[in-house]
Length: 50
Image (tube, rainbow, N blue to C red; front, side, top):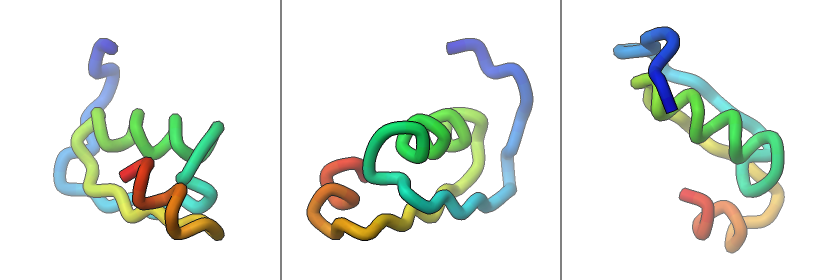
């Protein structure tokens, strides 16, 4: 994936990050350079995603 913009030095919080759209958003934000805090209802699924 081409880096279209830089989020270096930024922090993002993504809810619902264990799967689906939330997971893809967290991945894209992290690839853009930000630190990502991921939250979800299911601890096990979230740990697998991280």
